[in-house]
Image (tube, rainbow, N blue to C red; front, side, top):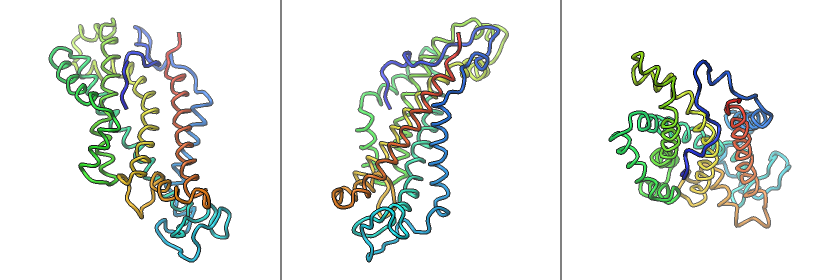
Length: 294
């Protein structure tokens, strides 16, 4: 996801001499606890889906299509016209969306952090080269570029991952570069350089711990965007392919039955909103926790 002002990201104040970043962090707040609890419950429910439902998510029951929630044997009903169990498809489909939200974001934050740290620390032609590469990606809207990559590679879950990995790292590179440029001139970094510490050691031990918090906070917003992107691609038929379950494709297949079987598109929509709320709460909690105390 693109950002326009990396230096405006809150939650990161460089470490001063004689202090550690951990010693000046805030307290764990209720949004962080609640958000982690919601996300953990959803993730565990999706992981242990075979223990929570006895139905195969692709199995059809043509004699019982469009059964409402709380029907015998179907807690969240079945879809139409195939009669597939909605709870089973919701849990198994959540595996794909949560995997994209977590896995896609994790790779991009690692790659972007490395690129931004190198660019900000070394400067000069290294900085110019890496930032011109990021500018090429920023020249195109994020969603349009991802759609183009997925359309070129073909619709599949793996290709959604590839598109996010190819595009998503640039925002983290800009954030980390800006924070590194602000941290590099500080006394403790210069002192480490004077005593002969290697460049890798200075970046890893003295700069990275004090700049990574901004990227972590942004990652919570980015994870929400990646999940929405996965759902949008599934809705458009460019993500997980039928009959495999995925929240976006569930909404697309159920939109024609919104009046008569409202639960088919509504329940996966509620799941997407719930995950978004969880990541938002985690982001708010991390902002308070990672922001250094005065």
